[in-house]
Image 1 (cartoon, rainbow, N blue to C red):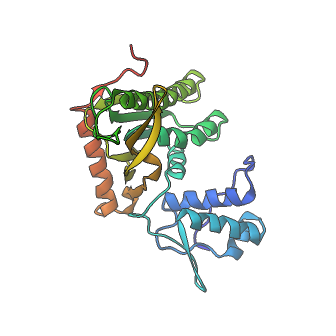
Image 2: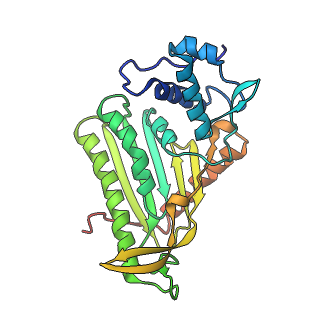
Image 3: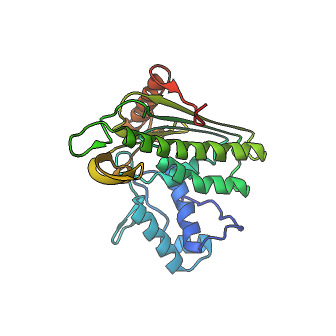
Amino acid sequence: MTFVPDPLDPDDDRPPYEQVASSLGAAIRTRKIAPGEKLPSQKELTEHYGFARATIQRALRDLEDEGLVVSRKGSGVFVRNRTERPAGLRPYVEQAFAATDVTIDFAGFSSETLHGALQEPLDKIRIGRLTPSSIKVRILVPDMAVPQAAPVRREDCGDDERLRLRMHEIMTGYARSIRDSMAELSHLGLVPDTSVDVRVHSGTQFFKLYVINGADAFFGYYPIKPNKVVAQGEPVEIYDLVGKDTVLFHHSVNDGESSSGTQQVQQASMWFDSVWNTIARGFDLDGH
């Protein structure tokens, strides 16, 4: 086989199929196996990893479920071209932490999804499996001190301070947790240099954007849907921005200098910096 996967970590306690899927997935995301390229055969993978064929088959099914590969009957398993298709964020965030210097820029309604995606790589840093030297996170979110286009009351689409306060508490809670986790890594001497900066702006954020290590961008729209929430102890029918229904599209600079993916990442970084450095304002997570 032309492509030789990296050896597995002997201390990895995950099930064998997860280890194989993680190894192959990392190779695909870093373009060691190019889009459109055929993966080694099941026989070759079985011999390389030393696991039963059933384990290899399960790992390939997981990669197919994730959208990384496609199986063609009689031909084999091929890497998908993922430049403009829905993508999962978590594996790319974890892969990003294998770099020496990690940068993550996030713009969105809250940082809930980012908070979730960070948990596994941070755990791996704590046990020494990932060893970045620096982590820089910038979070750009709407200022809930001013009226927004959403969330609003469903009955009249009117602004409601209770809804803004609820959203403010959600946003600050997740951002504070991210900040504290990074500070812990620094205090423990696990990552020498960490920072989490938060800025707010007056506009409603109708989309979410992640730019990771300046090399990968993820973009998706927040749909607005009816929702029922409890604000200051009272149920309120609202029109809400629903983050869990956001489909993310992935763009990478690894697709080539003049590719659409590279231009998307460059423009995403440019947009983020333009807002961050102009109309965004510093925000104290502790309210001082």
